[in-house]
Length: 275
Image 1 (tube, rainbow, N blue to C red):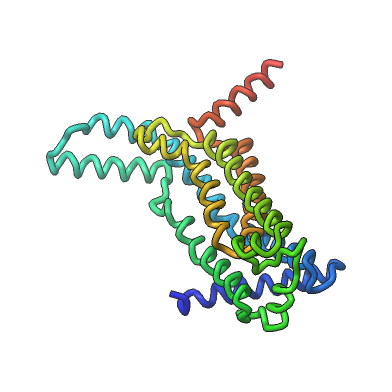
Image 2: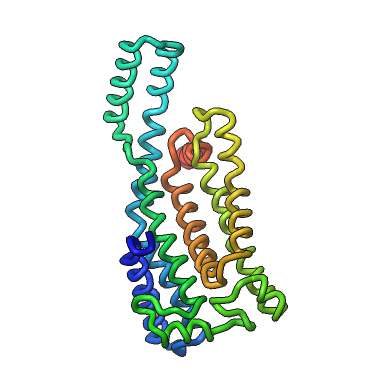
């Protein structure tokens, strides 16, 4: 698997090296903590910009599924309890026709799967930096530079346990960054993702899990922060800030039909028309 994904890892390393050069071109001292923090921020911007088509596909897919939901619900009710092979074949044919009518994608999991190699590459690059290994365009000089840069004694390659044991201020900075990343994840899910999710057609168990997802995500960030390098947590902080802003725009401008956010948008439009 590492060898298979090495092109992705090298691409991420090249982007990070390029964003560090860009930070220097913007006036920050090359190798400084500010330059590396800006490099990580610009890496987030580059990665999330590349992933925008995936995000747009996801929004369109959720809208298509929402438009198809009433017909699919009626179809399931009509064939409820049926075990006849001929009827089940007819039901699948009708279901396929409804999906085609509303352009429901059969690749709903593809966007998430496409991001997995990228997440692995990000972890691999930061892990190699932590170990002092060069990777792709991040040569020995850049690796040493990233390892030496620090804020209040906190390095991009630091881990929480040893950092708290050796320097309380640096450990507290790392805890604050992890809490910020977890909070942004929680608020984005609670304020923007849940209200744009229609759970009416989900089984109660799945709906409950959906409601718990914001908390599970935040706890997951905090749990992972105990084991991953500080550079990856900084990436999560910037990445979750992007997600927060992006989901806020989707919540306001393109909520899923039938969701609470869509009802709120319709009510707001009616109030505007009446005033």
